[in-house]
Amino acid sequence: MRHKRHRMRAIRQLGGEQLEARQLLAGLIQHGPTALEYNGVGYFLRTDTPRIERYDLTNETWLTPITLAGATGTPTAELVDANGIYVSFGPAVYRYNADGSGQTHLLNSTDTISAIHSDGNLLFLNHSSGLYARFISVNKTTNTIIDTIEQYVESVYGSSISTETNRILGRS
Image (tube, rainbow, N blue to C red; front, side, top):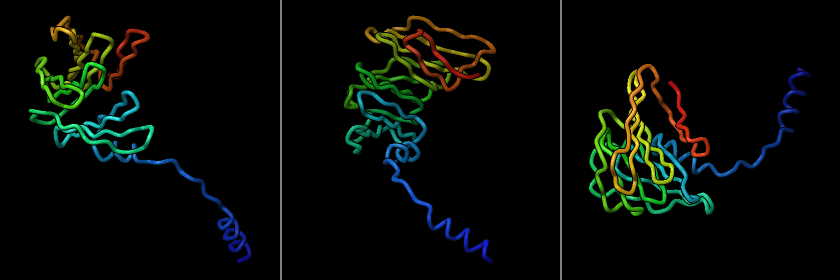
C-alpha cells in the first residue's frame, strides 16, 4: 500500500509542456497524402475533388482554396512553382495559372503520374509502374517533351528531386 501511494504522488508531480500548433499536420491527414510548400504556403492536393487547400505557414491560417478550372477525375500528383500549378489526373498532366484558372493540357503518359518535379525550366514526370522506372522530361516554356526514360528492374517510388546534385531520388 505504501508503494502505491508513493507512485501516485510521483504521477501528480509530472508536468506538461505546451505543444506547437498542429493545424498543418491535421490538414495533411484530412486532405490526402500530397502536400508541398512553396513561398511560405503549404499546398494540399485533395484527392476527392479537384481543389487545392492552402495554408499560410507564417501566419498559421488557412487561405482560400484553389479550385482547378475544368478539372475532372481524381488528382494524383501536384507541383507548385513560379510557372504555375501542375497537376496530374492519372496519366494526364495539366498546367494551371497560380489561381487555378487557364487549364493547359501538357501530355498523357502511359501510366499514372505519381510525382511531378521541377528544376528551372524543366519538368520531370514520374510514371514508374511495376518493375519499370519511367520518367518524362518536359520543357516548361514550350510544353514539349525533351526525353523519356524506361529502365527495367529500377522502379522509382516516393521520388524527390535534388536540384543541387541534379538527381531524382526514390525507392524501389
